[in-house]
Image (cartoon, rainbow, N blue to C red; front, side, top):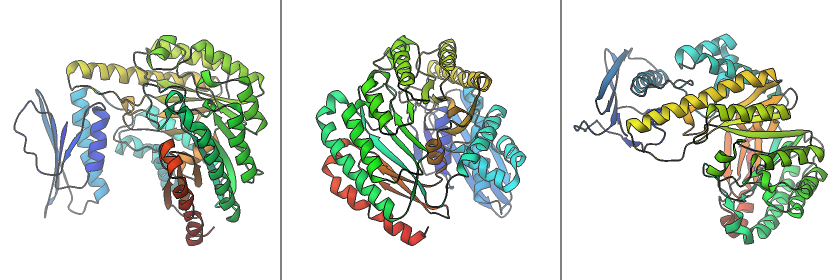
Length: 492
């Protein structure tokens, strides 16, 4: 799809909104007047014309036999954000008409809609936030209700953070195999086994140095999250080494949550669970994604539904009170009935929290009516899956406590964390709201230094891949020197 940006600066929103409707297509941006004459070339033309009598916004969509345009006229003093919103609405309406798809988040394309809802509520109250989402952003009523409940639950957690608070993220970028839908920076054990031992050794050194700096700055550790990848790809002794490095390097007295991703059931063993428990891990995540074995095989998971149930029972018997399970709505070829069966069975297990993701599409396709029909079917199925979550889970005692989105998600939908009251994953809330500093250790980890009494966030990146991490370790330690100067500059 070719998208022409003529005489305006709203290319980012225009591209993102186009991608909502054409998630599998290559979007080409041209910052120039439209110069296409051939009707068989799909394109979008967006144009702004400013004059003494006002600002005209023009949008045209051309796909095969579909040829439509729309325009609006605004006062000459209309601010940029309102011009952008009006352009987005024109484009949204044309794309909805052509595709016969009405995304429930309207013209919202950002990762953190709950942060926006919170800002609106703080400035004008909840009813103002609700009406703004519905009337000005075209968000559907179910998503408005979901936003309001999620923001309310997040609010209580955010109050517990203080200006000197921080969370720790530790990356273990290894998996037993790569899932077909995965977009994370991780490596399969088959290809990178020889890197694991030296990686763990340097990771422990980075943790120690990070802890030393945090202590000098008198920062207060609120939560720890060991993610990946699949941390339980490590052996029990390697897990113990990493977790012991954390316990020995940081003041854990104020830490309220210590999460370890045990995401792949085929990596869960009794000795690993024992190591996690003995080292203070109090929240783990064991993720079936689906309990349909045919779908599991199709997406490249090397476990069955029975393997998940065994791993879950093992974790319960090991004494873990807080077990999270991840599911994915919109997996390739999974029907609503299959997803419903999975959710029903997971709810019967009664875990403390359930996270429902939406598939982020990485496959490519051509702009054909067959492809569009498939897209419509996928979107409706995924939306029905989320609607069923909203029906079943509250009846089982769960409430939504955090929400975020990713690019190319089926139907521009969302990922939602559901939990029992008092069992919310506080790290998830802190990282999504960008509440306080998050110090990152390991390959692919990002440190986010948050201004203690202001909105400014500064990011410091570690090298993405494990081999880069090993080769550039001295540079990674050098970058941590910015921690001190940041807090000297912005105070505590």
